[in-house]
Length: 239
Length: 239
Image (cartoon, rainbow over all chains, first blue to last red):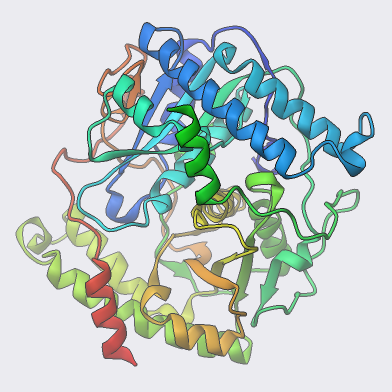
């Protein structure tokens, strides 16, 4: 179990074959075992495979995904610096993202993780995201994989209409899902002592040591996510 | 792995013995393997065990926890209806919560999951919560357990001061952690067909069937979480 958790990668390239119903059942069963305050279970999962509405929704999401990635690819200079060097880490990430958005309509299953409000205030993430992580881990356990994305951000209204979401429901994550064309494996993170403290902020405990062979990300401050202003601009350009 | 994911319960009663450093390392290593947008890793974990600042922080959190639970216990009528029946589900949940808050200062390890802002807007949950779920699952894999709480909600300022958090950091979850005095096991959720749809909202797929023996929660609409107004009132009463 520990090995599975620590080697679950974001999967962005899929074998283009359907996810069998018994696999979907096991993955979604695991997702819905996620915790929520007072066991309210305000998460709902909408699985898009190949029905007519699913195809329409995938096309809308694909359009949103391509627009968002276009803006991010140029805005975050994915093709400059090391990104211009063939097979560099940056270039490989950009290639995988480009593949994901170009083939969006062919992704075997796209899961929309939704929040269903029951009068409580905000804090929706606290219940939907742990269930999403269960989903990704269960997929990995069964030889599948996926990635958390926000591709619905810029096409919310169209999606809501096509899929018949009630006003009390909202999209939290868009999760492409399928059999990996690549493979899972160890992930790169900052050294453990930069992420984990004991007793007070910034105090790395002696035990916060990575296992031998762990690979790290660079220490540079990463680029901020697309701002809500920028997302609103993209959304307007699609309508 | 699937069995572990689907039988991870909220643990609120702990054996009062320290969590060994090698267990903390494995659990926090797993937590920090969680995904984040562009691998920004904006999560930080502050582990409170028995140092002087940790004890002070646990006392502050304990006070917040007891005030919040007092309000919730009466406001949500935990001692009325079936809650008044000894050993009913409702009464057992209330007992476990009362035990958790009464013994808060004795919890072996309290993990504060934090969000470190790097200029991106909102959406902090999307990176911190999946890591928290990894933490709970890794704990379960090693014979430990924990529970996601928001006990920091009403004591944020005092905690921030004691623990030396920078202005760019904020608390997302308070996670009591230790060896369970009880045990993990299957959890109760609504029937899968109420939580999972295919093609369009409300359309339960044929495969959304629970395994034989699955136990369900009642279908009643659960009580909303404490409102932000109510939380602010409790916060004011503590200062």
